[in-house]
Image: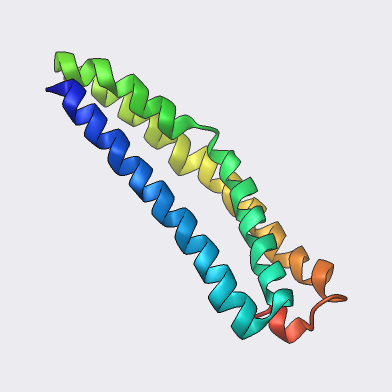
Length: 126
């Protein structure tokens, strides 16, 4: 039963990844490039890379938290589940959130000045 559910979960995850990949290709080709041009496509790509880099702040803590929950959930060890969730909550609500907010603020402040010589400021501040 668990093996069958795992296989279904993997299959659905693969379908999701393929859908996201195809949507990304189609949106870039038919929407951004044809409507807005390659300059705005470059801006969108750069912002996407910055957001992806900022996601590293999370550091895989959520994946580790989920992995740590498997055994306590199976054994119905509610005290251990509560400890894991509380630890995750402390990390995400304080440390990770503040660092992410600071990094996003720095990007918002300095990104327009970095690309203003390539793209008009009015397009950067959309």
